[in-house]
Length: 145
Image (tube, rainbow, N blue to C red; front, side):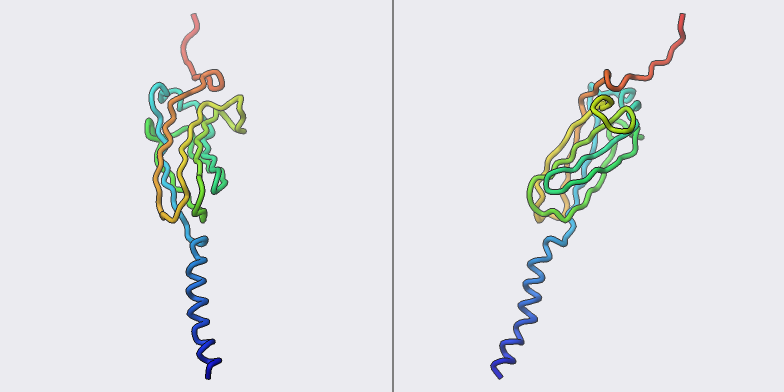
């Protein structure tokens, strides 16, 4: 009879322990808005042919975004999901003149950092306000004399 009483709570204990361990199996969502701000112009942004978000820290990934961006000055919001539930997570926007990505053809870069936690959805903004016209020459059209 005592053996039965002992085994009876075991399934309940397994359920409780399983519930505590399930935090690692819960997706956490990050809604990141990418915006361009003066002095970056729509003409400058239009020459970018490769737009990436590098994710680092508590999660690691590379996300390809449509490029050149269809909307200016607000490129839009993308959603990233991960099981990471602790530690810093950094989202870095990188815009390139062409593929493959290289420091010699990088037009712009900026980042935002959030802290992964038990919160299911977090929001952040990456504001791009610097543009390298040496690496990314503007398309200038005109007639020659």
